Length: 203
Image (cartoon, rainbow, N blue to C red; front, side, top):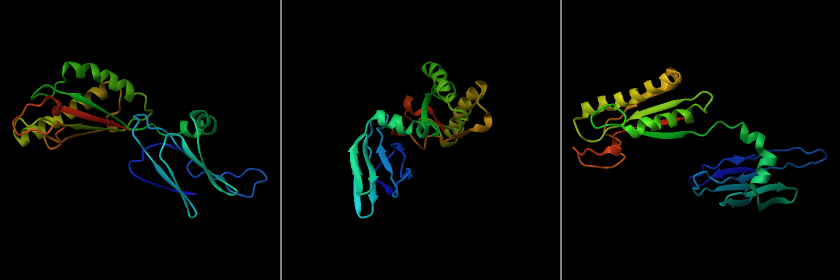
C-alpha cells in the first residue's frame, strides 16, 4: 500500500502503510487513518493500492487492506487511541510559532508582549531539546540600514530573554529581516505596530 499527498496535507497519519504479520495469515495488512487538524484546517490524502485509489478527506476517514482488497470506513478517536497511542506518543512535538511586539524605534517589548514572553517560555519549556529560530522585523519608518540593525537587535533581545530563562544559546538562531517581510503592507514611513515584531519558531 502506498500513499501520495494532495493539497496541504498536514494531518498526522497513524500507522501509515504499516505491514503487520498476524499468526496464521499469509497476507499483509495495513491501515491509514486521517486525523483531524488541531486548527480545523481541511486536509486530504490519496491512498493507492494497485489500480485502486481512495481519497480520505474527512476527519477519521480510513482505509485498511484486507485479503480481498482495501476497505474504506470511518474510524474514531477510540480506535486511534487503542491501536496507535504508542506510535503517536513517540512522535516529535509539532513546531509552534509565537509573535512578540516592540515599541516604535526600539528593541523594547510592548507591555503586553512582556507578559506574553512568560507564556511563550512555558510553551517552549515543554520541548525536551528545543530548537528555535528567532526572526526580527520592523515597520517602514527609517532607512534600510537602520531597520536591518534594529530588527537584529530585537531578535537578539528575545534570544537573550530566552537564554536568561534557561534555554541554551546554541539552540537559538537569531536573524533580522528589517522591513523586508511586512506583516501589514504599508508605504514607506508608516509606523505600523503589527510590523514591529519578532517571530519565534520552536521545533
